[in-house]
Length: 228
Length: 228
DNA sequence: TAGATTGTTAATCGATTAACAATC
DNA sequence: TAGATTGTTAATCGATTAACAATC
Image (tube, rainbow over all chains, first blue to last red; front, side, top):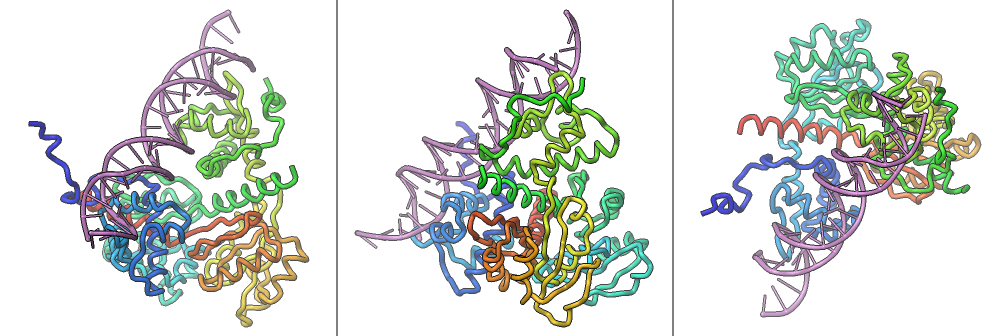
């Protein structure tokens, strides 16, 4: 008897036993966004076909993507919007709360602190840290700006999971390594560098200037096509 | 041998006759960044092999990517760093200047205005527009905040190419359509929506909350793997 | 039941990697 | 010339799309 062939149906296994491609992960927040809008408009059910037309993707891709995580739909019916919305939230880890710090009270640091949207999704900024003494004691939306010398203790004492790293390039690498030592689990990096950290710390980088360069490329390309 | 003067056969330009895949375009700013660092360190030449080790990609991919745009290297030598850096700048459209406005003087709008890095790359913020009268006349880094009622005229009179759109979601779509009408060529969109605009206007969206959700996914996935 | 639509396998397409002849 | 490394073609791998049997 071939044992290998007797192991058939999935689902008994946890979601993360196989590696999901990053292309799929990158699309999840977008699904989540569209489902949230549908929910706001009191839409109860939707088929992959309808959703595909709204999102300008193929229905096939939607079904393939979702089936990486489980069978959330029903034949002949489609998907229950609220249920699917909540399932994707769980997949994305939005069913839990994250305590965050912001490291660097510059332009971007302050902008992130000022935002209320992230908090709605479970990402709560607890404190901002900087090296500039004139900022100490100031608050943004009630969030205190503190001396970066206190950062290590603060992370350890308050179970901080995520650090938004908004320091200049030349300070970012050293700080990132410290954050790892101090037990941070995820770094939301705004510095224009590629952080290489141990695999038990996750990095997500927002490359603003890369983004602007892509826009520039596309504008230039379009203009060249025009006058050729 | 002077590589700079060794002009290749095919390179005689018309970069945009074939469609370059967006995977390639997305990597260009990263190449540009690494080459800039090499240049700062006075590195004169580099082979695809060496660069691939620094960047943690394959040498093959680097050569394939670059050859979409022309033969910038030389057999037996590699690539001249400065030359390649400048060529990529041209491809990305960084050899020209863009005049920009920021629409929305909120957190992100002000943060972008405060940045000096973009200006170095040729993206100059000329003015910020908002609906809130208490802000009118204020400046950020010398950049005036003006009444959004003046935006149409300002764009038309000052040949503005790019608008950074930092309005809340519900105002962003209407404004985007207006920007198109007023002749904007590129929109750098920070609102969490998918703008669908005519093909003569390019959109580049920065989805901050999508980015944070990806971080959250990766943290959660890592923690699950650990305790299975 | 009949119709609709999923979950999933198979086919296609595109992107990445490997290999190597060309050539500096 | 001999060695190195590109530019480019061919092979592989992965992701997307198509098709359809299962089933609600």
